Image (tube, rainbow, N blue to C red; front, side, top):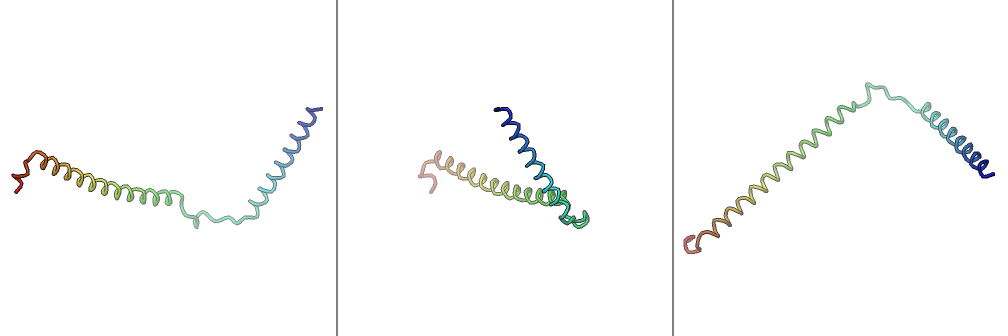
Amino acid sequence: MASSGYVQVAVLLLAVQLLCLRAADADQETGTVIPAESRPCVDCHAFEFMQRALQDLKKTAFNLDARTETLVLRAERRALCDCMPTNSLR
């Protein structure tokens, strides 16, 4: 008796799946198709995205470079000040 319950559930799931597939096919048929000429090119979008990402990376690299230079100058100044007596700085 338990196996007949499983069979009924399997048949019910199959029927629901078939109904969903038919509904999805009907939705696709009623939709409008945009011609390829008027759709934006996927490669163009990818290119624009990569251009923006490259610009962001350039800005980040410039900011990191400037920050690194500032930190190096601070470290050099500290090292210079640490090795020289305070009397000789005047």
